Length: 223
Image 1 (tube, rainbow, N blue to C red):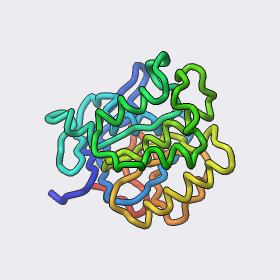
Image 2 (cartoon, rainbow, N blue to C red):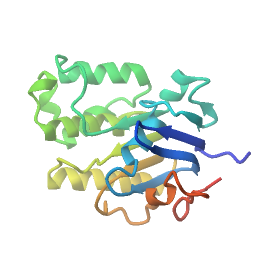
Image 3 (tube, rainbow, N blue to C red):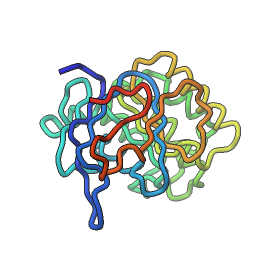
């Protein structure tokens, strides 16, 4: 079996009314992939399945050979899902919420999170309860954390939503640098073109559950 950073083998996932994915197999190496598709195509669902927030009905997910079902804790330390939801535990202060996540993942480079908090302009919210932050502040807090964690697979769900122009430029510059480095795998959803030249593309219309032979996008290793 060919080794890939992230493997999805024979994935099934169903909701009450239909199958979202059936028999989907994909492989990803280092770099960034733009996951595209209309509303309801399964973009967020795919990221949450890879991130461990949803459990597949069947199939296997591995990161660096670590199986999500056989070694769930080890697997979850290698992936991080960053969505647009307001963080859970709203009574925590921002600093406490960050410390909780850093303690779960560990090995965050000294100063990396502080530098990104400052760059996104949210260093001043650390002592505020999460439920007092604006939507934009929540988004910047989540992104600063996500970009600082030592994970192998970073899952960014509509990361440009709710950001001002300066934060968009900052995020795009960091993602372009990571694309060039190509050490880790980034899956990013966006309704519009994220402006990341050279990003691979995965069109979820091609992974429709009724397809006889699901096909991924250009430059993806489809198994």
